[in-house]
Length: 254
Ligand code: CIR
Image (cartoon, rainbow, N blue to C red; front, side, top):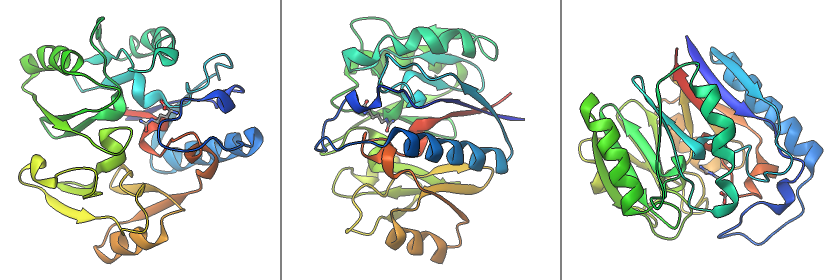
């Protein structure tokens, strides 16, 4: 059984962290409707969606991916690189404790879940503006007893590793080659985004289908031409907060 943990859009989302985008007005009601449609897509793909209540004083708390990494064996609660996001972790730890033994990244290490890409037993961790060597080293120490390798990958030009690369089918990664060296991922097939859609490398693979932003039609054509089954979702309001589709859930089996 697949579980997808989500959290409602904060009424304070207008005050979200922004790194690469100019601040634009976010229509809260529209963002909430899009988020509900995203949850519905997860449910259609077979997830039991555990939708947590919005935290109105934590603007970025809808982006639950960043506060934890859930493996089959253990959950790691992160220590987000952005100070404003650190209080989000206290709200996720007790939820994950229902499913996994929970460990924590400790200060002064910093790690965002958006920087962590798992492909089988290989974990790639982005050294980004949010995640540092100490955070990645702590992750490595926690997961190696379970047989995972952790490779750190430099990220340039974007917020997180998973802004630049995600796994879109088993053994297939979708990359923005401007932001990441695909060679870092070893023996995988590599697809590139359409160069007119720089933010298009983030898709969420669930039960063999790809939850994917409706705003990247050119890259979608490439994905479908390669035989991938795409489930489009409109996340335009959350994109204004530098969010994408992986960042709005934690998906794992229970
Ligand atoms: C932030 O800057 O932390 C949020 N505004 C966006 C986080 C998006 N997270 C993700 O892609 N994993």
